[in-house]
Image 1: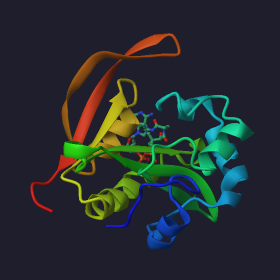
Image 2: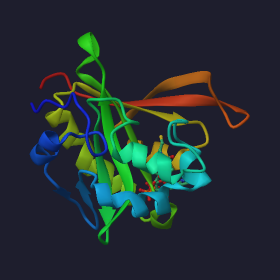
Image 3: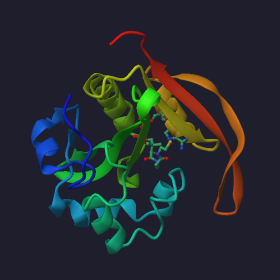
Length: 193
Ligand SMILES: CC(C)(COP(=O)(O)OP(=O)(O)OC[C@H]1O[C@@H](n2cnc3c(N)ncnc32)[C@H](O)[C@@H]1OP(=O)(O)O)[C@@H](O)C(=O)NCCC(=O)NCCS
């Protein structure tokens, strides 16, 4: 397994980027972030509808400084395996898995987003179908989990379509933009590596 403990472009060091292949999907490519993805990143990320379903570390407005910090590896937790979703030559979104530590090192948290222009065409369903089995092998995961805010039916459907089971709801878990939300938890598991 490659050492993914230091940072570089996005969450990957130069060495890790060299070890990370491009994954070719139907209508998209998953590949490491490039320093010159900044303009495309800003165009798609600076959208309240995108950040609404994400953690506050993905802010709105999404400024040039935010994009530069992300691409410089200062936003994601070291060890996160995060790839750009490239469509028609542009980075239009992102998908990543953040592994736990110590006894939780075989569990990771899945996160993803897509620029609004690409929504509703089945892209993220296909992206997760490609990424989830790959990253479970790459990071030697028994468990890949995801947390979804109560209103985010599209994200829940992406997970259910990809073999994630809904495990329960953490009530009143998130207070975001003045509204209290429940958090639905989903996971895809396997019992051998
Ligand atoms: C959630 C998100 C990733 C979905 O991506 P997408 O490419 O539009 O999803 P898909 O086109 O693959 O749609 C998946 C399913 O959800 C449904 N869906 C999509 N958006 C929906 C919505 N707003 N409400 C209800 N259903 C929706 C689709 O009809 C499809 O249903 P089907 O499986 O029955 O055909 C995208 O909207 C996004 O990036 N949102 C902002 C960031 C975010 O919330 N990330 C997830 C955090 S948990």
